[in-house]
Length: 96
Image (cartoon, rainbow, N blue to C red; front, side, top):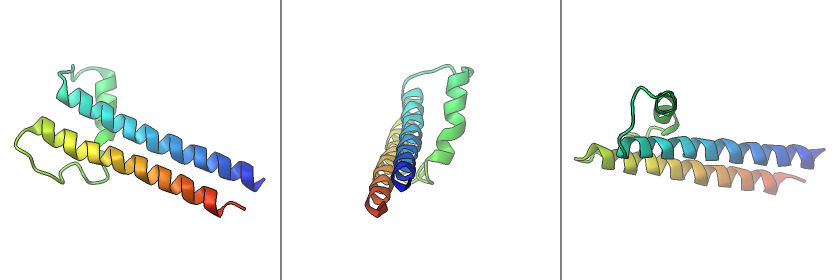
């Protein structure tokens, strides 16, 4: 019972952290390469990106806005991946 619950929790943490990182990477790609701002996928990704950036969206102030998005949102994506792996590992360790 505990093992199945832990397996599900690990799976859920990994899925959520990877989806968050994916949304941030898509936002970076949509910012660096010209996209149609009226496109529904672009608007969807844009609406979530700032809230998923963990407050890092304005950490570094660079002259070029595209580089600023790449650095700040890329850092946030890395943090999501690292945190997801760390939490999943922690769940595995404490599971009897």
